[in-house]
Image (cartoon, rainbow, N blue to C red):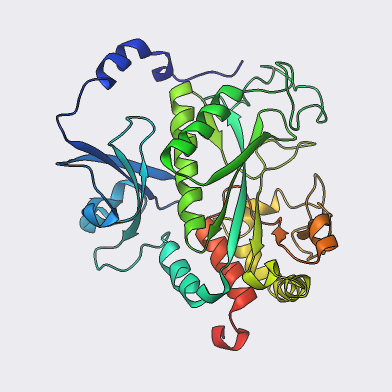
Length: 368
């Protein structure tokens, strides 16, 4: 059995005694931001005199960037700019979670703030009403890094019985999955589903459809909620694209894409045009689809375990070994959406949606 954190073993009944106390009309606001790794999330909380009615009611704040891989110690103040507000499922109403952009001391977006550039692109393509849906795969681990519920020495049975499974011998960690789902719904995250994945202790949740910049906002907050729920259970959720070497599935973040034209009658031709454009920029997209410019995805995109090879671009109807999959019903109805299966589980959704919208909808001449 994987080891669990000490804090998860604290008496939760004692905690509940304090959590049920009234707040005297005050509101706790937890600011959330992406750190300098491009993957990690940080947060801190402040008190407001009253519940904010909108994002405009939440003041800017700052933090020490030298402790988050984002600044030098001699010039470490970074700015938190609130951009999106959610209900707090941990301390409950009226308290809020607030996703923030990070700006440097000179008010230029921080290196791992891909939201600023993404928002510009989404404004340019607004007329296309581009929708995204992202399928976030993740793996549950003990704090010792060993997969949750895997035998201490050795491996579980080979893959086969775990995908969408039920039963104690097949589904590991469902409590975490269901608590995360409820937390997302309470918060206002546009979560649309969840399922057990092919590798034991691996799960997936789906967020969307979201239009434009909302995709990145909602997925990042869903990730924060996942890590926070796992913390309560003393378990770690990793977004590593290939957490276990060998004959085990990796973890991706398949991205479904649909524009207004693709959804209308005859939309398949617009899907095919978009795929043709994506084929011409495969290497560029691979660089954008994980935080290390393709190095993480290289371990996952091998051409095996329902992936395409990282060096090749391919597309096909109902083909899970292709870079781009057109669902069978889309091929039949000749309209709908396509699925880009290349993004890694630890991708930045702002970078992914920015790249897709730019390639598919902006003129190549305009970008060059």
